[in-house]
Length: 336
Image (cartoon, rainbow, N blue to C red; front, side):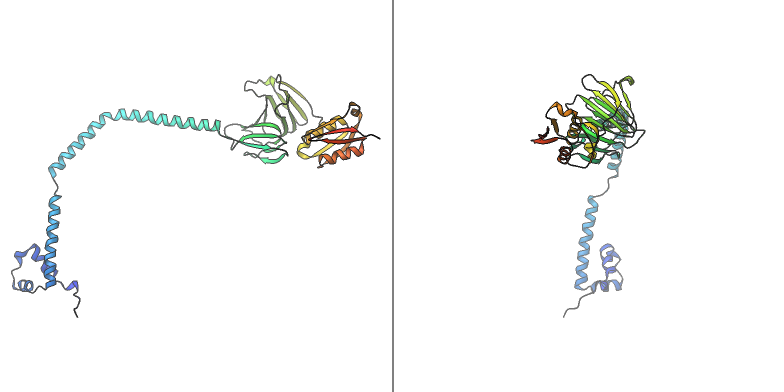
């Protein structure tokens, strides 16, 4: 069986001298060892000679041309000197480009804040209770109402648009007044609670203040202080759409928030006014059969009742009965 030969036993020193300094192999010991090369060592010697030859050929091809390198350096230096001549011009061009980019970016940011998309909050057949706006203001919407507001309030004011009726509990912020655009009216507050009624198609916009202080004016940036109302708790302000006329009075409507609270109170209230309050609270129409019924009055408190439950109670308290006609109701005198 053939024994594997360890590479460490190969006489690499002698092989190296045979390749690089063959003339130095003149002593008897080296000559003897060269003559005693095994077949494997002889093969290593031949392969090493070929490797050294290949390496020499590669370096010969890659030989560094110092003259050529020096000329290259001179050319590069000349190019740099020429570029310096045009540098101020390029700097001016770059400055103009940077200015245009910054102007465009600032314009985009400005327009984005001005035109950022609005979120729509809508109440269909039933009111929306206690929805919180981005600033912490709480809003309730009556049936058929819509509120449009941004995802976040930027700048020095908080602006929303109301279509219909809503009750606002505005988060106080002295640095950012809260402004509601409602039909032709503008309602401005710093922190208060109030009700705004501005359904499309109505002939007026109505604001009733529950707490705090509210300013009501035409929805016009050029409005002067003489064309505005300052309302305090218990007061009612109206803007008439036909001529932007403003009017203020004490609020005598005990049920102006019944659409939100479902709580109604009547104190010797004429039946016609009862019908109007119920119609507003439940978003329907209630009519009286004839004018003779105007002399009937109602006293009572109804908390969280359905409309038909209240009408049934009225029918038991007064000589009337009600009739449902599709989506409306009619009150009639009860025949004995």
